[in-house]
Amino acid sequence: MRFLDAILCISLASEIHGTDEAIRRTALSCAAKMTNQRDRRLIMEIANGKKPTLHVAVMLKELPDHILQMNPSPRRPMPFKTPGSLCMTDPDPSVSAISPLAAFLKR
Image 1 (cartoon, one colour):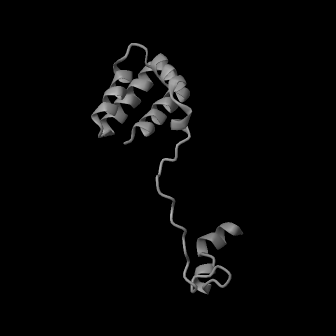
Image 2 (cartoon, helix red, strand yellow):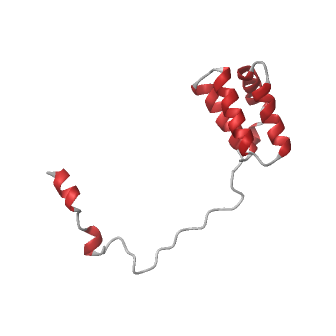
Image 3 (cartoon, helix red, strand yellow):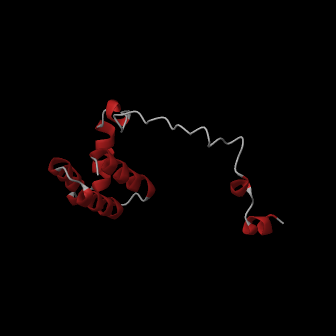
């Protein structure tokens, strides 16, 4: 798990639940899934702190905007190319046929 993924999970726990216990549980769960020791240490500081809700609020305020707006994947996704035989304008009759269950529910 990446650091930004963990921060997202923890901030969602803070927004949804708003309790120290929910933030601690989420932080511990995220820390267990992290591979980077430095990032894990930062997440564990949240879990072991006296006021995790305050810690998360301060951390989110101090987080630079360029981190919040960065693209999570460095590569662009490859465009999906359909072969000429798979054309949606001329579907195979067996594919376009309605299932017996769908026909029953449609009544």
